[in-house]
Image (cartoon, rainbow, N blue to C red; front, side, top):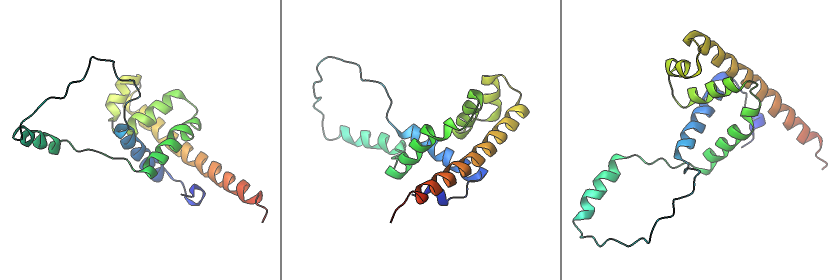
Amino acid sequence: MNLSTIKWDAETVKYWLSIAALVDRALPPVRTKKCTGQYWPIVREWYEFLWDSDKEDLKPKIQATNEQVSMWEEIVLRWFKLIDSDKDKKIVWLRSCGMPYNRISKRLGFSRQTLTIRYNNAIERLAKSLNEFYHQKGSVETSNYRG
């Protein structure tokens, strides 16, 4: 995926952030498993599996594709470095995870209106920074090409 060809605006940035939040939920946790005793297999009857399959159908399982994981890495490792304030980083990430403004404002100690303004300003600055970053990076890569 060539990111230098994309025209970054606020809606595109919000869309990519929402995908990154979904992928973050689908990724496995970053902790080691507890060491427990010996695992012994449980012998089960065939009719016990019928109830297990019903429970599995109720929970939707989200599988992230390789492209979505690459998008998540790009956002987490590069985009958040472009946001200046740590509070703005928290606001952008919590909002992209789907948390409403009033819960974020209670958590961070801002009014809802101030939070909305800071979020919109952070998204606009991020879109502007992404346009500069990717278009500058793309022009540098093509100018160094000797062919």
